Image (cartoon, rainbow, N blue to C red; front, side):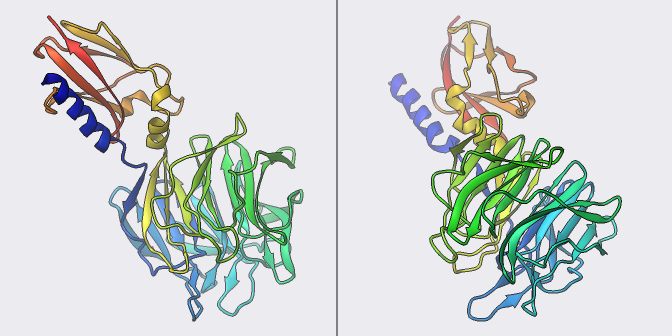
Length: 405
């Protein structure tokens, strides 16, 4: 009978433990839309601009600030160039930069604006070099901003430019070596820029390149996943890159899959799917170890908003590789528990331990102070117990031990 109870508890814990790593948050504060622009400054995220084109094309000029601590949206100053979509964005220091895009008039823009969250004001900076465009990629490296690729009135482009905020000037850099494209994905990992996927004259692609700013050089890397895609989203967290969603051709088959890139190994691994409806033009930004993503379209425009907990994702997927050792087991007074080698970006102090008796009642809860912890079991009755390791109240590994005095 005891064995049945133990098995029941393990089944119960297993069924409820592995939630996430996508969690739905408060809906985006503005109207549902796609081709929005997004960035983050400090502990706040920002999404704005975009359009809907279901029958009637409607563009937007509003911008919204997201506070993850209160899970609330607040409207900020409108974009000064007016209604616009498919604009590029990057962040330098404590200021956001947004520019290019398609205007309400139908013309493309090459203007750029700097947003200061302290004053809630936009200031126009120098126009980006090259021709006006939409669907360009933006990212920042070493205190400078970079913008390139995109769609112009004459077709897709592959030119690439660097912005220096100290001199308010743009400089032409090495051309992107892949096919000219629009609706690609770009982000930064540890001092290097990355750009990949997108729509080319030959259709959607999954090639992926690294940009070394010091050498002004592009290097071909492993392709993203196993299918081509465009109009996807991407971001980088704790030294790993992520690309997902999008579609195979404009207004084509929408995706919900996500892939994780390790720049050290130059490999992509498929991870948990995006938890919302499959879509294209998902807008995303990163705060700490979490990414936030929302809006987009599948033909229907969305305003739902989601948080991706990267640490929970890694812990859950690599739980089998995290070797938990217990000694002694059975134990009479104390058990030494070691978590082994956690990923370097995961702090053991963020991990908690819950101990359950065979009926499912919580007997003890402990916060880790290092990779190893001493469990005092002297006051626990003899019998079987189940431990549950948790990050942010979500379990990623369970096991059992015996108390025997």
